[in-house]
Length: 152
Image 1: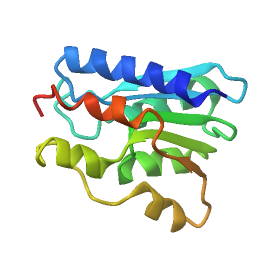
Image 2: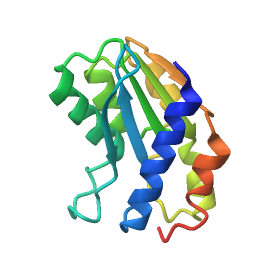
Image 3: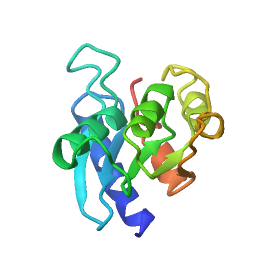
Image 4: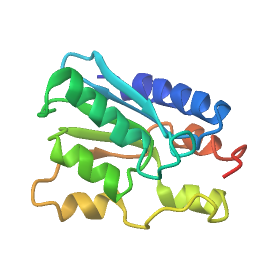
């Protein structure tokens, strides 16, 4: 799989979310054969609910399309997943998580306005009891640039 190609799609999704008044997060789940199973953005403002993160939405959509076991699938996300998002992917048995920039970078870029628990995905993965493949830094500068124009 070409991680950069799928991250480009996640960035496009994040831009559309930002244009719609949401935080600029984008995520998608890609099946074992390279097909996009689901895409999602944050919907925290639209739904007035802080649990509507892009990654959770993408995992939810992929489970609806493929079933509750996402073994062999990859979650692509513009920002390192928070504990809630990592857990949703882990519970669904996603095999890989590929992210752009870190949450620490987003927090610094937004002066703390983009609020999130400071628990690195690497730590969660190492302590999960069943680590998945975790790849960070894919198109990280482009993912972080989404927050330079953010009103978060």
